[in-house]
Image 1 (tube, one colour):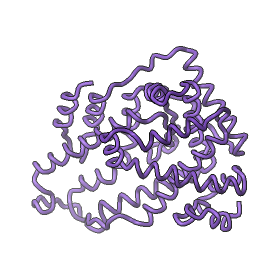
Image 2 (cartoon, rainbow, N blue to C red):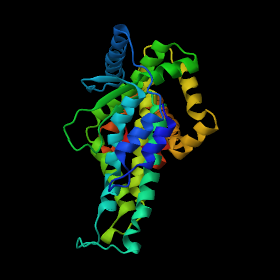
Image 3 (spheres, rainbow, N blue to C red):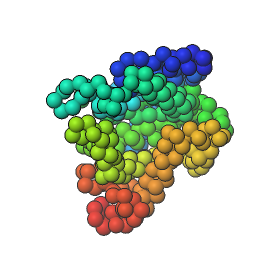
Image 4 (cartoon, helix red, strand yellow):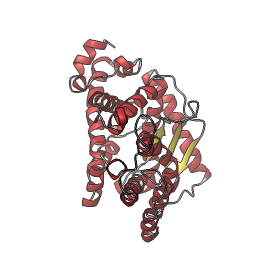
Amino acid sequence: MDILRSVRAVAEAEGPGVVDWDRAASAAKEATDPGSIAISDAERAGYAADVRDARSRLTEVAGIEFDVPDTVEVQNRHHWIDASVGTFRRVMDPIEAAAADPGGPDGTFDATPAKRGPAFAQDVSRVANTGSMAFALGFLSRNVLGQYDPLLLADEPDADHGLYFVHPNIVAVASALDVDYPRFRRWIAFHEVTHAAEFGAAPWLPEYLESRVERGVEGMVGGEGGVSRGLDPDAFAELQAAMTAVEGYAEVLMDRAFDGEYADLRAKLDERRGGGGPVRRLAQRLLGLGLKRRQYERGAAFFRHVADERGIEAAGAVWERAENLPTGDELDDPDAWIVRVDP
């Protein structure tokens, strides 16, 4: 870990885009200890068994048939950065495209400062954006435990989904929470495999989420003549409701399917999500992680109520079609969703 080399990588950001992605990734890795993935064959087999057992239990409990990725990756923090920078880049593609647009609707280039701005200002903006992205990638790589990647916005529509476990983070958090590491690792596996179950049960979900992301970003970066229309509130609201459902369902199902005691794990992990020192709390606020925590809590409350009233299999009706997703109002009034959908 070398902070000076990280700063130098950001300062040397270059290229035509609003972010120098290669240098953002390099800076994030220079500022982050990769951690060790020197694990035994038995431990590697343990990860595989956790995923396999989670799939069997989730199929049994929720009545959902789904596949898990062919390859499950045990990563260090640098591996996670490399795997995730492509996702960040795909989300930013519309903004990159707008920044590279040479001019108006006829494609002509207008080099006046009012339209394009001095080259120096663009360079400064690129450095700032690259530094912000490096900070986000580095912070997240030190905190993410596992991740299911449905490869949203992927260039190859037939690309396989991914399942990652950031091993040094799982070990570190299990120690910090003073919980049994194999049990904690298994519980995290159940959470990530639950996301695979959601997307497996809802083949329409990736396209639904992609369309809302694209509409929201396009609204910010340009309409006629490249003039921003502002954030699309409907796209944002629908995206938020869908992600709240994704996170909330995973929280409830992972607990009900887990084949062991989990109450202490849930209590300690929930406390960790809202805790930490002032720097961690500031980073969480800047990265919107407080919103993500709210998604967990709000979505879990919705699905606990539905599961208590109709059963956990009935709660899975949310994935039958897009129209079954709860609205923002229904997330706070699950009985209204039950009346409308009648699962």
